[in-house]
Amino acid sequence: MIRFVRDMVRVLNLACEQHTALFSRELDEPIRPGERAGLWLHVRVCAGCRRFRRQMRAMREMARSLASGLEGGQAMPAGVRRRIGESLDVSGADGGAEDRAMAGEDSAPGV
Ligand SMILES: [Zn+2]
Image (cartoon, rainbow, N blue to C red; front, side):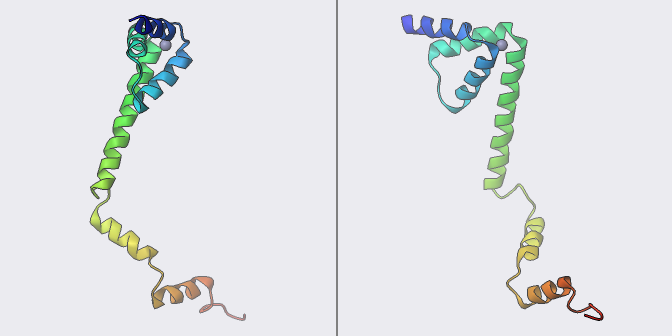
């Protein structure tokens, strides 16, 4: 209990800049109950930190939904993926011809 109060008081005495670092840490790993209580109290009175925390959580949710879309293969339509794959495929004979054409070997008069 003493540790809880000590952590809470320590967090309450931090500057807002240090609170934002704690918000970030809170998303990555569990913080101590006293630290969580201190943050909870601080965001009740500090609009800036409250907004910052809400934006961090929103960004995390967006990143998670993007990652889950990529894992499920739903982030990009199949047709788009196929066309990108075809444009990146330079292993065939056409790729070499295309490279020569792009280098101007076929249409370079007087060289
Ligand atoms: Zn603050």
